[in-house]
Length: 501
Ligand SMILES: Nc1ncnc2c1ncn2[C@@H]1O[C@H](COP(=O)(O)OP(=O)(O)O)[C@@H](O)[C@H]1O
Ligand SMILES: [Mg+2]
Image (cartoon, rainbow, N blue to C red; front, side, top):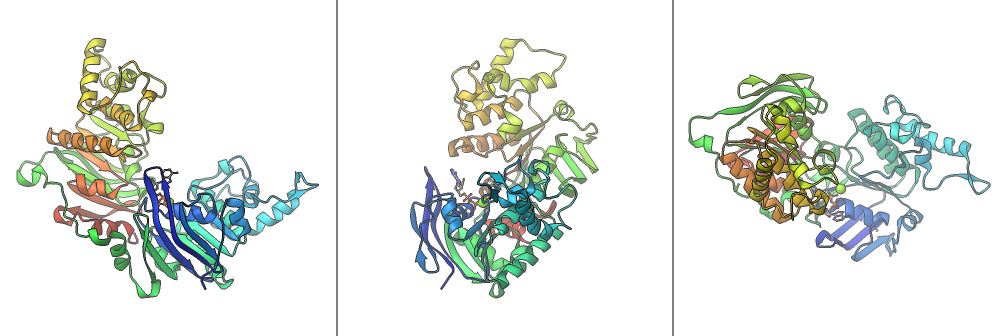
């Protein structure tokens, strides 16, 4: 009898069906891998087991008996521990306090019993002591730690639950090799203690190193389970891709493939920096170059580095044959480079300010000497916004009065007032609706046809396959594959993205 069983579990968030049909059986003493592309429903499934999301239908059975996981406390009481992908740490508390949350040892009913707390925490801190790196200690506040160290604390917190069922939702995404190896040693020990474990990771090498069985989830449905010993990465990728395999690429061959004159606008060689190594590529006039691969493999860092907003330790960036020497966004902008991020909160929108102020800052940066007449600038702004079908009342309305998609159009319109040569798009459609996406991609293609060179990083594979002329697949900070022409299939993209770097 499986230790944990999910049967026909589903969950919708409004119109988004996150989980259509989740069926999963976890045995005691196994590491059960769950794999699926971004947005396929993995975290939703985990949260249902952890009690932080209530399912719309389906059953959760423990030791063969249906149980009501009515909340996180109920889940803990049932013996389920979880590592949350987005972490569940209290930033101002210490490592030890976080490990012992949520059941803090208290004395006299109210005071935290420091001695017991430290003793209990020390057991888990010790497990990672020699791989945790500088600044890591039981009494360090979590907000002083690096991303990998926080992830280790979340692991320790899950382990400290001592639960018979342990769920790890992408616990290794920020860890280095030595930290992953240590984590795997611990998992192997837990297997001997007959714990039942779920492990989510995108890395094939990890999955095949630690997993006993693997279940593939696609578009909210668990579509198959295999023994790791009886399958291979290619078969797993085929299950992830499903029937739509060998989808013919929909983009036309780029203009330059047919004509002989290919004018290179941007040329990058040997570019290295934090999170990326030895990146080289060219972008020609009229071309949309795609950056693909799993999230966080260096794509955004490379784009930000070209724009002068991120660090570069080696390599060269040439713009229309001239070295881009100065390394600040201001210089990049003056040289005709534009950068649009999907992270409007961080990079894009000037909150609370009128639309006009959100459209015009780049114009002022580029043309510091020639201040345009305000009325002429308003006309330009209006034309740029209309080209994108932006829905707004007047230019004086605050940007916050617009929907996410329309805010993103304002951020893009900002760059169109003065045409850049190179447009860097850093996952530009995050959080915008389908019709806004369609408008954006139609515009991007039009800009390319009018002579811009465009680099598009998208975390959604379909966006890349449908819009990029060529795709560079990033894996572990390097480009591991280039997909051109008829090679631009979902299968090839997944395969390159998910295989070990
Ligand atoms: N709280 C939420 N509100 C609305 N949509 C959500 C929420 N959480 C997840 N989703 C959506 O549900 C789908 C599945 O998400 P998730 O379970 O996080 O996938 P995964 O972990 O496989 O990447 C995605 O389309 C995601 O955008
Ligand atoms: Mg997830």
